[in-house]
Image 1 (cartoon, rainbow, N blue to C red):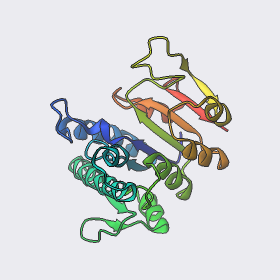
Image 2 (image 1 turned 45 degrees about the vertical axis):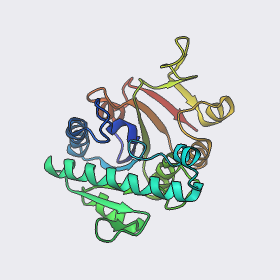
Image 3 (image 1 turned 180 degrees about the horizontal axis):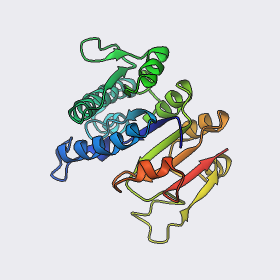
Image 4 (image 1 turned 90 degrees about the horizontal axis):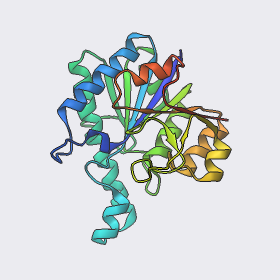
Length: 235
C-alpha cells in the first residue's frame, strides 16, 4: 500500500456518450473510486486534463490561434474539469480542494506546494488545475511535476485500455501488451503512454508509474495493493 499517490486523468474520460463535455455518471463513478482510496488512508491528489472541452494544440492548428494562447485556454478548461470533480467528490462526502497554477482566486486556491501537502496530510483530496501554469507543457508533464513536488509514492495514469501497449490497441489489432518496463525502455521505444518530458521527470526522481483502465471498477485500489492490475514503469 502506498502512502501518497497522484492520479492523472485525461479530460476525454469525462466525455458523455452523447458528446456533452462532462458526463455526470462518470463523475459519480470516479467519486466512488476515489472514496475507496481515501477510506484506505491513502493521500490522493489528481491532475485532470481539459481535452473534453478544449485541446490547445489541435485548436491552434484549426483556428490560427497562437499556440501560447491556445494552451492557456486549455489550462482554463482543466480548471472547469477540476471544479466538476470537486463538486462530485464533495457530494460523496470527500473533503476536496482545487488548486490552480493560474490565479483564479474566486474559484480555486493558488497552487502552493506546502499548502497542498498540508491538505493531503489532513485527508483532503487535492485537485491540481491549469497544468504547470505555462504554455507548451502537457498535463502529463504537470502530473509528473506535481507528483514529484508533493512527494508522491506512485503516479497512476488512468487510461481507457488495460495498461501499456507498444502501439495503440484501439487502432492496431497486433498491439502487444507490456506488463512491466523501465523508463529508459519506454523512452527508447517511444511508447505513447506519456510524453517524453513527463517520463524523463519520473525517471530522474525514481517515481514509478502505474497504467490502469479507469473504467474498470476497483482498478485504482487494486493498483495500490500491488496486484496484477495494469502495467508498471519503473526506474
